[in-house]
Image 1 (tube, rainbow, N blue to C red):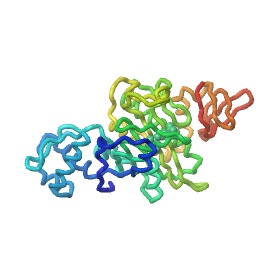
Image 2: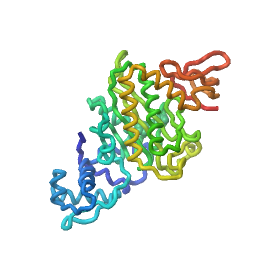
Image 3: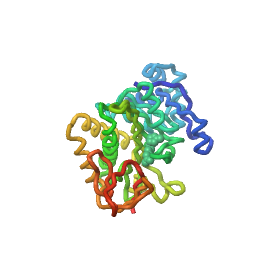
Length: 356
Ligand code: BTN
């Protein structure tokens, strides 16, 4: 199901620069008009054919003048469409936009295929997903944005979310799991990111840093923010937000020292659509495994340790309880990081862990 809202937020190229804060306050998150994607979907089905405005209108359930208006909107965002109402239309190129019609064909059979919501500009896809979950949106609902004006990270951090360069994606899950298992699910999301990246370019070996960072050559290119609504014994819903730096060529300010993107790390441009689809497939696999396989918990923790160069034997500083230094000593059975200091073995619950 795709919600249809008639909006004009496609015109991101015409926006006036504003500060993050002012835009976050003044720009509402508006879901993309689903008919834009449908026009692309129909034109993609007949790639070599000129399609009349009347046929297009019939296929997407609107009028010919409306089709012309939608075609013009699509051109503004970079979709190559030749023709006009009298001649008919033909698709010549599609930009790397995370539209449902682009992602869905690649993730059929997963829990994420049926409810993909796209935003040209959102505040935070996690916030949108949480609001939707509270209103009863089904498990597997996906919220993707080309740009976030108030992207949120762990703690009170912001997530740098420049236009059409990253994947900014949040999903709603409603697992029949106790809240204590949510950390394992969150760790499994990191594994899913790692597998998705490797599926696309097997030369890249992303490194996991507990709990939710994914790094290449010591720099962060992906962060995961898992937020849940739960009772003491039961999860109501989880929103897992994944931010991946894909085609950024530079980062502002302090981020330049600590952040990287897949393009910077590999020297090639990546398809965000392909990566987002690979991520959702991989996340579907990890999630179903966790729900269905009684040994999955242990196996995920084991795999996380294997695929994280810093989970064991790394010198770290932990910003928790006044801060302390020590050496990482693997994960405990719930997924928390153990750190051995001179005095004792600490269990890290949520503080920032800095590699020394
Ligand atoms: C972190 O490393 O601190 C977590 C970053 C999570 C960023 C993603 S981008 C999509 C989703 N929407 C948000 O506002 N945050 C998450």
